Image (cartoon, rainbow, N blue to C red; front, side, top):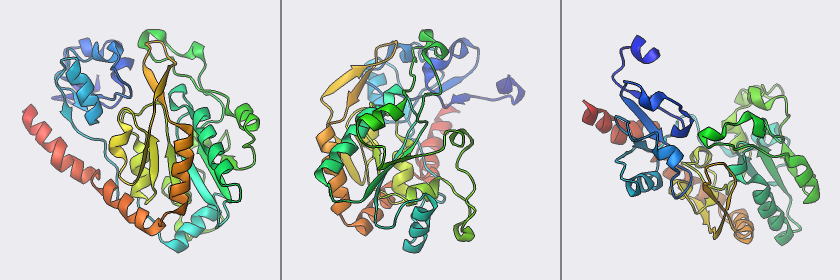
Length: 327
């Protein structure tokens, strides 16, 4: 409807193509951003791309997967607003730690993920537990910025779309792993509304994601597969070293940090897409390396990498030439 109201030349969708039931059959210049977080690419995705006017791949991984299925695409990476996501100074970072109830000398590991089976959060918890076992005298916290209980049930999903990607109740697993003390998580009721206002110190303004990233020392993002992994870019823009599973689109977005080997996969959803499990010991070893590394050096390296994905750079280098080619 809006396509016709605006007399649009093209409709670019920023969502996994497999959720659209009929859009690919409409008489419009349908241009999907093909978000591909697995390999080999599912026919549930490629079947929605055959009639597209143009196809945008947000990762080189996705572009390669589409090429293997004889689908042409244009690479336009996901961007990050580096004027918003940025490192704060030392004094401000101390305030950020206080905002989120961390002690100044705690090594804070942050996870920013949806509670979905693809994210393999319980598997990552085991990586953090192994880190604590390797470093029993270290003061550390793991901050889970996610729903601790699933917001969707199997009945809510539609197998015909090939998603069926529900979450899990993380609370029992935390206690089984003995992580109920070092792990912090947000209030169940507040998470859907976003980060609440900070009222104890207004020198930095309110609570927000930038301050959450700046309260941490590193981002753990070893999921089963990422189309891009936006938190990787956001965290590095804020100066954090990161790590992710060496699979799908995530590794392309690691400039300061580690790509964790993954030699085995699981299939958790209806279309049978493969999601790889990061090596638990390597996750723990990488956290140890980051903890013992030079934070200022890592901060500069992470920031420099993220600036390559600043939205202004993405628009100038990739989007504008693409639009010119569509004329």
